[in-house]
Length: 273
Ligand code: PXL
Image 1: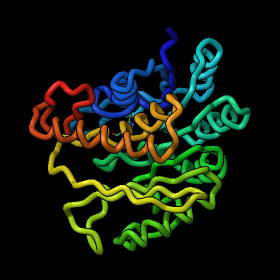
Image 2 (image 1 turned 90 degrees about the horizontal axis):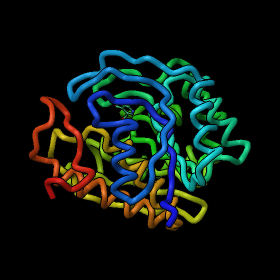
Image 3 (image 1 turned 135 degrees about the vertical axis):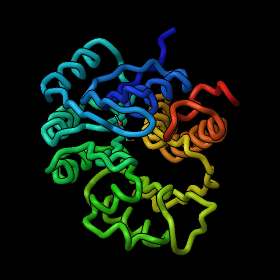
Image 4 (image 1 turned 120 degrees about the horizontal axis):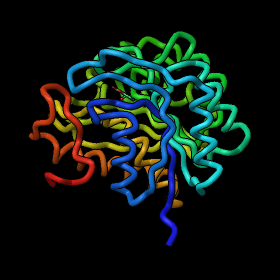
């Protein structure tokens, strides 16, 4: 047999909650062989990010080349890219048609407020990488920054749809705006709706909100799970639906566990299910 293979291009989280570590566990949970290109080393735990050391863009590309030269990579996820030059370098590889089923999670800032992208990253994403994506998966804050609107003005599903339309106009095949950070307005606290928009129109994926501090790496995991589904040939809406169920289950079974003293990881492998 030949295991299905995917690639994550993302940062390392020393605490094992987000980034490469979350992506590889997610791939494993979906029976996908995970390959990786490390874009940055972060020193962090469940409480804070204390250092970020970017990897040189040519070293990132060398890792991608090494993987693509040997494996049949059926889907690629990008997470934290750390520097605009890395966004541009990854976009060059994508433009050459070498990154199948490209899921771009446009990571800009950590939940704890630490910058995970240098100045100029927004423009690089907008101009170079996003137009080449199969799907982009911004949270509300990232969507607002990429669309150039004030995050505080996004408070309803209609506002989210408008954001999704603005981002679809940048050229990706689909946009998933995640409502996990939606606080006020038309939807209640109990829900975390996401909107998927493609040329086929919008669909809303509603999910109840899980009350827990153990939510570190949910965004990374969702994008990696979508990539895993696409690697298996699932249609995009099905891959998104499966990915949401996966993250919801992993959040639910991790809700009460203790890993670190802050925002702990989710239960990717169902240890507490
Ligand atoms: O969740 C965004 C993210 C992505 N990648 C790495 C991170 C984080 C958040 O902390 O550390 C490496």
